[in-house]
Amino acid sequence: MADKKWMPRWFYQLASPRWCYEITGKLLPLFVIAAILLLVTGTVWALAFAPADYQQGNSFRIIYIHVPSSILAQSCYMLMAVAGAIGLIWKMKVADMVAKCCAPIGASIAVLSLATGAIWGKPTWGSWWVWDARLTSMLILFFLYLGIIALNSAIESERTAAQSTAVLALVGLVNIPIIKYSVDWWNTLHQPATFKLTERPAMPAEMWVPLLVMVIGFYCFFAVAMMLRLRNEIIQRERRSSWVRDLIAG
Amino acid sequence: MNDSVPNQSTEESMVHVYKVDGPFWGALKRDLLLSYRRKSDLVNPLIFFLMVATLFPLGVSPDPTFLADVAPGVVWVAALLATLLSMDSMFRSDFEDGTLEQILLSPQPLYLVVLAKVLAHWMLTGLPLTLLAPVLGVMLFLPGDGMWGLVLSLLLGTPTLSLVGAIGAALTVGLRKGGVLISLLVLPLYIPVLIFGSAAVQGAVTGLPLGGYLAILGAMLSLGLVMAPLAIGAALRISVSG
Image 1 (tube, helix red, strand yellow):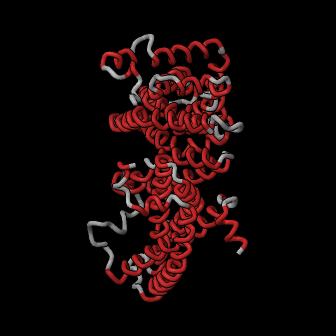
Image 2: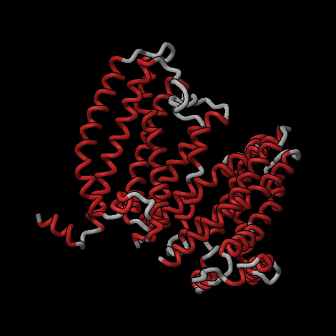
């Protein structure tokens, strides 16, 4: 065991469903408050106070849902693949559960992203759907989520299901850079990335600051949804262990 | 505490792995022989390929100019579905009679055995499909300029389909109802191959240079050759142990 000292202590603690259940119980209220605050401020700011676009008028305001949900749908896939890899390599039960919980949340957020994109596309491009690279790769991401959910529910053994979906999620990871760079590689109708780590956004600050608030708000919301599902999953899988029995007995 | 398998430890024996009596050629020969003895399995994907392509003129429109427009896509979609159809049986019989367990237990590198199985699968589905494709092209009034594009794009694209499909087959081999599930897992990953494959044929028809499309199909194939056998091997181990 001497060669494992470089790993921080919390990494091992994460492997314990009980510890994970307790820590998420403490963190959950914080994230609920943060998500409500950020999403309410962001929405009011974006809909009422941010200036209208000079070309698109008020229809551009859907960006405040569309961009955060698109970013989140991809991040969620990354989390699922990383958690799946951790589950495969270190055989960590909690990582398997995290990966399993990611898929339905990610699929619904991908639907939100595609739907808001379609609603935005109608007034701006004149059609609900265009077969351009960004839209198609996002649709593939949604299909990948569906495939992962289908595989997970088809396998009865929890351990095998987790391992199989982890392999599939890792294979599907090739799609993530394609989505990211689709607007740069192909000359598409979809506009380039709104946020980049290295540059200032092309929009004025009055427009992108509320967008940033919304993005962080979406992440907090995701954390809340994730923790709720994870806690459910932990209780369900550990139902035979003594600490869960004590918990339920009150 | 020496974990290494003796006949893999020296450089000399690494060469042995690729010899005619080594695991790669052994697995390839075995799979080819097995399917030669069950000839109907060989022909079925090809008949399916022909039939799917027949559905389009009858179901959509027999107009030659329309058919010429859609021919690249139709032939590619038909080839993709025919490959998908043959995928489920790839590891099924080996799993059922216990051969797969023996393969996983054997000291031979799983990577090579899996690669040989995929190669055998491609030689029995992808390659005949590629050779049959010009006939379908003629039936669908594909202009003569597009034929080379069709054959070359299928030649580079169908091995990728076999490699990716084998991942799905390996993941679902332990399940009784794998058929539909494989399609759900694999089709999203097939979409990029389909896009560039049919775009190559369209490009050949309109006289654009093919190099770019073929390079991308080749890049996908290279990535698949390197990475897919690892995923297939891992998936087989999970399926068999589960």
